[in-house]
Image 1: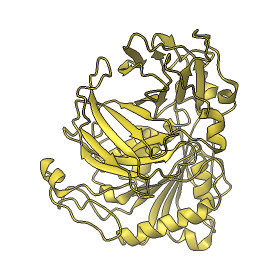
Image 2: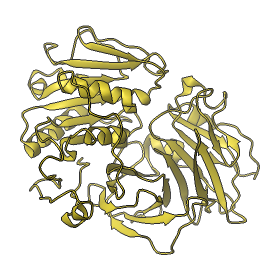
Image 3: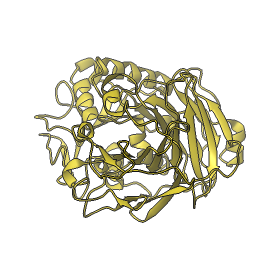
Image 4: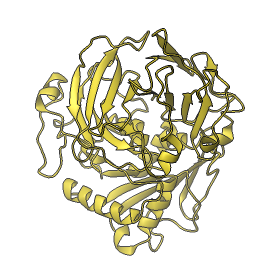
Length: 436
């Protein structure tokens, strides 16, 4: 799916970044001369299990901060819970990227299961001709570089502190072992960006490792079903400014009201870099749960703002289909998007409850999403659900967040604070707080 949307000329003028035009097949930005280098080959990123394209949000920003055009950055969504013909769909996607950009080849990057799919994709001799470089991240070891003949230059990134994949090697590839990076950080860290940038650019170092800060970042994104990444079309997305000290809406009316396309895409809109936001998503199906996403301020253009709908069928529903609908309590999830929460290294507290404990967050768990709700007795028992413990990257705690009186729940992750309102889980919906 396309993850780059048209930023209107009006918005670009507001940001003083020049004019734009529209490709006939895709909404893209054509920046003013000198602001980015269109000579770069397009990069195609492939996410891992239970993930979506927003895995790559920070890496998009870092490449853009180093003169890569946003229209040269693509990410591929697929069903990581058992989708078939993923390599065929990836081939169709890459063909579209080549057509849209006029490039002869792409740079291909795969993380975890996405690395398995990427390496497999390159094993076909015809497909291999479309790939200039391949980056294999936190995935399985291989006997030769990517390509039918092992002739695609390959970078293999791994980490001894990755409890999922560990240190891996690919014979004949450039193997880089990072230190202190969990399974997600091998994909999202600045060290990984630096290695990828140099790999794609003849060992030339990036000009900066920092993300360029913007006062009025333009954001766009996609609505999907959690887990299988099925697009959610015709959904309503309302964006509210919220008070940073309570999570309460600053105004009764949303700043923006958007409708997702058939592909699930929404935006672009221009936001304020100093403001905290709530994204409320409601579908056309009255049986779907309303979900309220709370975000830290955006610091840079972000084309990968993902809103996930609670699944009602399939494997995802077996985990999340029974979230309580109980107006006496809130149902809250915290998503640490770019890293796991590791006991002894990280601190995550929700409403005074420690989630980064040795029991819930050992390094071996690699948890990035924490679901909190009560089993119905109105008491926090701090037990973990059996279904959650059998799935990677997800955790659940029996914690009772009462909705009376109306107020806020404080979240604190590694020194960063967010506040969310204690919404009623039946009437209002599910709360998701994202630390990006």
